[in-house]
Image 1 (cartoon, rainbow, N blue to C red):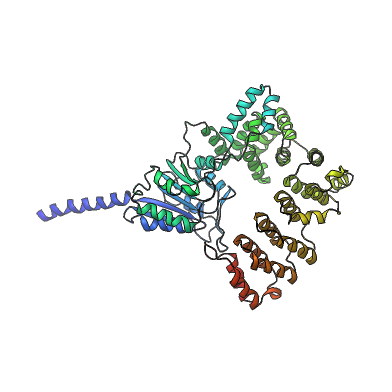
Image 2 (tube, rainbow, N blue to C red):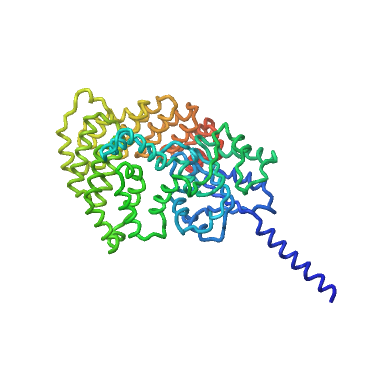
Amino acid sequence: MSWFRVLVPVLVASLFASVDASAEKKTVCTITVNSPDEKQTFERNLPASDYQFVELVKHGNPNWLASACHSDVRCDVLLISGHFDGGTDFYSDRVDVRESLSVEELEHASCSSSCPGLFSQLKEVYLFGCNTLNAEALHSASAEVKRSLVRSGHSPADADRLARALQEVHGESNRDRMRHIFKDVPAIYGFSSKAPLGVYAGPVLEHYFQSGDATGIGTGHPSSKLVGLFAPVSMTSTSGVSDSEPQAAHRRDVCELADDRESIEQKLAHLHEFLAREPAEVRMLLDRIEHYVASLGDQDRRQPAAEKALADIASDRAARARFLDFARDADEPAVRMRMLEVARALNWLTPTEKHAELVRMIVEALNANVADPAVVDRACAMSRDRELTEAFQQVRLPPAYADNVTHAAMLACLGRTDSRGRILSALSSGDDADAQVAQVYLGHRPIADAAEFRHVATGVARMPGSTAQVRALDTLARQPPGDADSMRVLTDLFRLTKSIEVQRAIAGILIRADYKTIASPELVASLRKHRIKSPAGDDVIDVLIKRLEAH
């Protein structure tokens, strides 16, 4: 009996010690959509007795984040690895990886109850992607904002001050968005510009762990040592936004339209409140407004509560007038077009009124010599409108504009057929702005035949290796494939170029070609001999070689 009395307390103490040890384990969640190097380095160096790892991405499951949100996982540390150049998605450059992670998904998870536990106890976030903490504003308080404030009755000095305040609250840099998403998280690490590839980041992390300064992983205490090691490649750190900051109000605005707990009626009431604000502030919220309006389907709009809320917005003549006045005064034609689309969706413009506004905008852009690919895109998209194309047949421009690629592309889309050669030449001109216009135009008016493809490919092959050449090749990859002669031009360029980006872009074209026409042992041998090895492992060039070998 005495042994029993002694043994039971020992067993109970041992059991609770085991439970306590398990409870104290920190959970490192990983979202790996590109390189696994960073994740693997953390796994090698953090003891299994203190840390457990959970990969949230489930390959083949497009709803992996939702699945993770409904699990019992609670993350202390989060590692996200993926390219982030555009600032909207974490994505992979590996052709065998389809998974990605959008900022929009993260905002929904942060703002609503759809992900109640996953990020609720986060102490640290590591964002291994380019520009993840870039502080440059995505939206600027431009001259149009200041003019709008003056029209509203503010003095020029007050308009300047208010514009700066709006910029501070609504500018929304990548850094701001990550701070909003990871609210109250003590330590967020990322990059203000170009981030290192995983094969570089892994060894730097290894050095950090081996230095003995990494004992506080998961505690939320920022590490100046880690930032210092990555300083040559722009690592920086910050913390999540708190309720005491001015930006907390903007986060509430964002969440009012992103929160899954809000009904359509409630969200439309928030939208109406946004639209009733100063036009300058409405402009700063335009991304959010147009995204939500575009998300409303016919079924949503037919709900009785939604119908009434939309009718209230449509009948708000004061808000309509302010919104359209701002749109017509917008410095950027692309902003004007976006605002006109929103106005139509809110029944502030009839189809006929919207048509008239667009015609006026394009004529003004032509006469003002505005080079904007977005205007070209809109003009080309409108080209099915017979009345519009007939109107533009009559447009007469000053002779000095005859060589302008933007004008040529707009007029070509709207019925003029004498400018196509000028637009195609722009793709290989080396002028990035003109090349962007040509790229947009060819998205609507693709290359017509093999001879035209060959002509463009020859011009692109003569360009010096540059971002412009990669853009031109990427444009060709979206066109109908060329003939064998065109492919020879490109394979010669593959052999001569010193740029892996150019080689990958060429592979992106060849991979869509007719393999029966181009596949040969000589081509495969040439690709193998002259390819520049990818530092990140297999890429589209390797996939091309394998497919050619199979034929």
